Image (cartoon, rainbow, N blue to C red):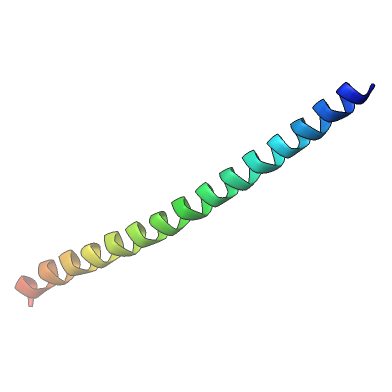
Length: 56
């Protein structure tokens, strides 16, 4: 009985740590994605400006 209880505690801790790890990884990915999308938007705007200039 005691062995099983320890196993359960270890499993809960493991799941807890894995979930924290995944959440932290997700946050990093979201930050990178935001940064990248901002850069993409900026380059798109620059390209649009370049295209607009010759038509005027």
